[in-house]
Length: 542
Image 1 (cartoon, rainbow, N blue to C red):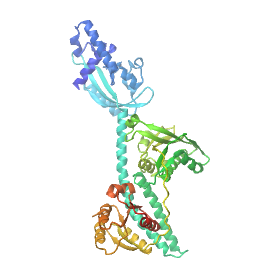
Image 2 (image 1 turned 90 degrees about the horizontal axis):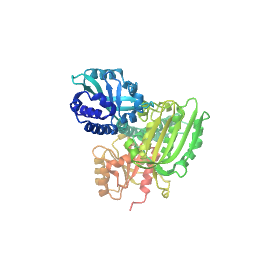
Image 3 (image 1 turned 90 degrees about the vertical axis):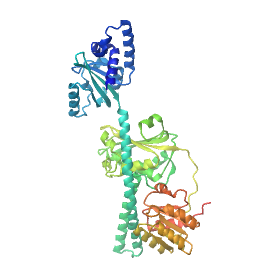
Image 4 (image 1 turned 180 degrees about the vertical axis):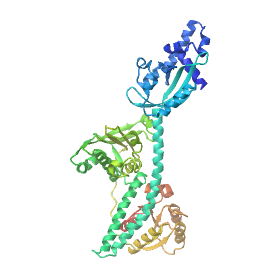
C-alpha cells in the first residue's frame, strides 16, 4: 500500500500538470532545492513513464475535481483530457452499482484511508467496463488530505473469462447429473417399452387392451425422447457421425424450415462457396438447426426475418484466449439470426441451462440439448445480441478432410435363433424382460444379476455359450471386467454391451479394445433381438 502511494506520488511529480499539484507537499518538498536542470531531467523521465503506463492514473483535488489523467485513462474511457479536467469522476458512473457501494467509498476517503474495489464504469461511447481500483490520499506537510490518486486497471476481459469458466464448470456439473438421471430412467423405460411390446403380441387385433398397450408404449417412447435430450445435454447421446457438407444439409432442410416458419416470417439462407465438411450425426445436426430456427421464430411473435449463413472460419490463439476451452483450428461456422427483441446479458448467462433460458420455445431442454450435441460433436456454440437488436447463435464445428465412404452394413433379416445367450443385468425388471424376449425367439437364455454371478456361470456351464449380453455399470463386478475374464474362459463367445449411458461414455468404463457390440437403452423387443442376431452373425475380427 505504502509502495503504491509512493510510486503514484513519484509519477505525479513527473507529469506536467500533476507536478504543480503535488510538488509542495510530502516527500517532494525535500527535493525543492535540487538543481533545476537535474530536476527537469527527473521530471521528464517520470512524465514519460507515467504516460506509457498501462494502468490508468487519475488525480483529484480534495473536493473531487479531476486535475490530471494519463494517456491510459484516455484509452480506457474514450474521454480526452480537455473533456474531463475539472469534472468529477462521477461522470464515469454506470448507474449499475448500489448507492451503498459509493457511500462506503466516500466514507473511507473521508477518514483519510485508502480504498480498494472494483468499479463498473461507463465509457464515453456508453459501453460498460470493469476497473480494479486503488484510491490513495495525498497529504500536505501538516497531514491534511489535499489530493487523491486513483490507480485503475481494466479487468473487463479477465472478469468475463472467469465468468465463462465458472459457467462452463457449472454446466459440466449439471450435465453429469442429467446423464445419471437419464441412465436410471432408461433402465425403467426399457422395461415399460419392452413389456408393452410383449403384451401387444398376446392381444387380439381390435382389443381395447391392445390399444392400452400401444398407448403405454407410445408414452414410453415419448419419455425416451426426453431422456435422449438429457443425454444430448450431458453429451452422452449416441451419435452416428458422418462427413456432411453443411450447405447440402441446409438445402435439404430448407423446404421443411419454410413450412414451419409460415408466411409471417421470412427465411434467408446465405451459403458460402467452397464450404468445408464437418463430421456430425445428420439427425442431431438437423435437430440443432431446427431448434435454433424455431427458437428464433418464437422470439418474433409478430413476424420478422430468420437468417442462416455459413462460412469457413479459422479460430486462432487470440480467440482461444478470450473463449475458454476453445481449441484453435479450422472450423465450419453456421449462424442463425433473428430480428426479434434480443436478449439481455443476464439471459445470455443462463441461455443453455436446462429450464432456464429457453422459455420462448416452450421446451425447457431445447437449447440445452443443442449445447450438448454441439459439444459432443467437438464444436462450440455462442449466443450474442442486445435487447431490441435481435439474437444470433453461432455454431462452430471442426472442419475435416473428406474421406471415401465405406460399404453400408447388410441389413439383418433373421431375428430368431437357437444359440445360448448369457444375460447379465443388475436391474431385475430389465433382466427378466431380455430373458423373456430372447426365449420367445428360440434362444436358450442363462441369466445373472451381476458380474460375479455371470463369471460363475461362464466357469461352470458345461455347454457352449455363444453370446453374452451384459450391462456395463454394475455393482460387484462391471461388464468390462467380466468381458475380459470371459475372453480367457470362452474366447469364441461374442459380447454385446447394453447401457443407459451412451457408447462413448461406456468406453470410459474400460470396454475400449474389446470386440463387442453396443445396445443403447431403452430398446424395444425387436431392437434387442435384431442386435443380438447382428452380433452373432457378424464376421469375426481378425
